[in-house]
Length: 336
Image 1 (cartoon, rainbow, N blue to C red):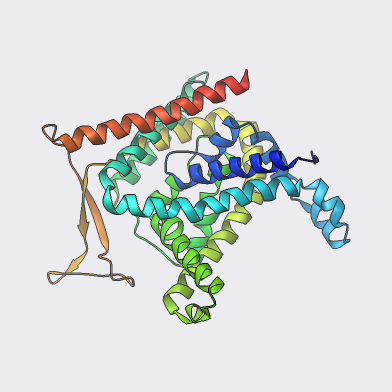
Image 2 (cartoon, rainbow, N blue to C red; image 1 turned 90 degrees about the vertical axis):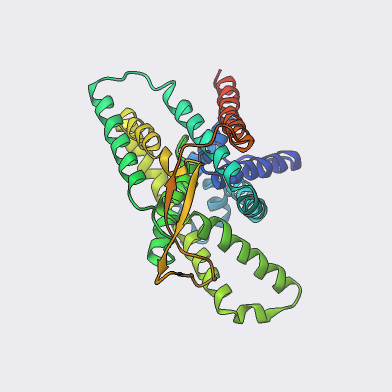
């Protein structure tokens, strides 16, 4: 599938990668869905599957030109380059809005997740007994997670690697949001906000000639985290694309039904109206290594419908849902 591309085509693929990276960063939106809507999903999966033993043999033999053509390397560099670049820009924007407009951001996320459920489920097909049972299992798992104490941030490197492997599935499976999964695992902010921001800060300092930044133990810790997370993501892209291809080919409806149920049952986790309860000991708040109060749980509540803030939040839920509907509409036009 290797093709000679013009400069305009290269720029277009980079921008498409940028859009996919934005989608992967936002809970509720699947990068795989965006790649399908923008018309490069099949080539993306094809290219991932070409990173195999044959490609390794070409590298070992030093046949770099053949490796470049066989794996569609130019395409992957353009798409992944755009996706990675988006993390350095979107993370800063999300960080700001989460700090200043938390209710509205989570309302937007909530709306997009509902839209994603609609996107996956509307063309599902036959809800036979087997698929219905799979749906119920998925719902029960999601509800069970919602009523458990939310996962706390975990920076153990083995767990960060697992987060990378799981989180990247949103690129290879349309409708499944990798960032949404990271929220469930408790490491969304650590991996897609804090670590990315620290990496950007370190790169900026290095380019300005300030190498002392590498002696900062906190920044070094974040660099280790994002390196392990990136390694896990790369491993996931190469391996899970093959596994998912096999599983979906044999049990597509069952897997899709479980996913629909799981996301539906887990909506309570991203319910916008919740009060954060912080961990305390002897009346004092416990702090993490960054000096932030440690979250123990969330107390969800019904919004006050006499408040203008509530209606603004509902508006953002509608906007989030509408965004997925628009993507789905244009995706349908692409398929025709």
